Each structure stands twice: as C-alpha cells, then as structure tokens.
Length: 280
Image (cartoon, rainbow, N blue to C red):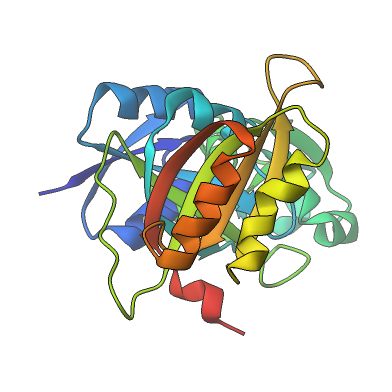
C-alpha cells in the first residue's frame, strides 16, 4: 500500500525526493503552499506531511514556525537530506545556449559562483520543481532551471551540470508530521528528540529561569528559536528541540521547571533521532 504524502511544490521538489527516500511507495499530494500541506493533514489523518524546516546554508524555512502552533500536527520523525542542485534544460539544449536560469530564491543563492561563471541571468520562481516544469512546458531553448535530478526525470529534461551548488554538504532538515499521532514510549538504548513550543510569562528573568531547569538536570537543547506572533513585537513564541524523551526523568523535570515560567506550552512531538546527527 502506498503512503499518501503531502508536500509543498510540484512533483520533483526536494520534499518529494526526501519522501521517496523515507518511504518505499508514495502517492504524492503536491500542494501550492505550506499551509495547504498542513490543511491537508488536518483534514485527513491518513496523510503524512514531509516539510522542510531548516537548511544548513539558508537557515530556517519561512512560514513553518507560524504554522506549527496554528495546526499543532504531531511530529513523528525527522530526516536530513543532502541537497544536490542540478542545472536542467530541455533536450538538445547546450550550456552555451542558456541565457537565463529560473529557480527558488534559496537555490539561486546557493549557486552564485556557477551563475557568475557562466554569466547567467536569474529569474526567481516559487519553487525548484515548478521551475523545471515551466521550462519543459514552454520548450525553452535559452532558459534552464536549478532543481533536483528527480525533477529532470519527471519532466524529461537534460542535466547540464550536476552539483551546481557553491558548497558541498548543503543539507535540509525535514519534519514528518501527522494528525494526532500517539507519542512513542520511552525505550532504553534509543535516542529521541522532544519538540515543543512555548510562550514565556512577561516577567523579568522568565526566560533565564525557564531554561535553567535544563542546565540543572544536564539536558541538552539542540535548537531554540523565537518568532513573533499576531503582528506584534510584544508577544513571542519559542520553538525548542530537546535531546531526550519527555518521559526521561531529567527531561521530565526540566519541562516541569519550564512550565512554571510559561503562559502556554505544547509538546508537538517525541520522535527518534535521525542518524545524520551523529555523522562527523
């Protein structure tokens, strides 16, 4: 049976590529926006979403942090995918024929050296795979796209250049999410990440005191980010990744300490650590 996977972007997007690595058989639901992905999961408990949350070069992915507290889907896993950009063009088109390159802003930003080397004019588009589809649909002879090798296969394009990015090791972290999924039980020998979002009480030293429990209990935090909500700078939500299972004694005590200084706290997921985290 095929897993029904919701992604943002056209078929051939890096989210599609990540999904194909995660699941043997996939039925991909391509959504125009990230919110459309969250909506699809909210409406159908059988849909799994594969969403990029951060990139090693470009930083966090816009909009995701705002959608997490709004929809409160359950994070069931994480996956780190190595991004390898390809320069794609229609069949019979040569590199010397290319004048313009179309892609997502982040992909363009990650390929500046080669773009300058070949003196190519860039066109910013909504996504990488959509750019590949565009040049295929229009049979362009002077325009290329920066996208995945999967996009080349889907849209019958030629790969003019592989590894078109400036730096190797460009990696995107994806979250795998579902609607109201049970958290896994604490298991000895297995490593977990607990992800939560919280809002601090408006009192002096609240954030310092809230995080103090983690230091006291020797619990590592792998990520802490803040973002404003409701179009104001006065109200801030924090996104937190904790190294450990929420039912682990030290982690549990740390979260209890955190709760004392928060107005609101939601655990979005407890899930196995991706083995990529241990690669040197």
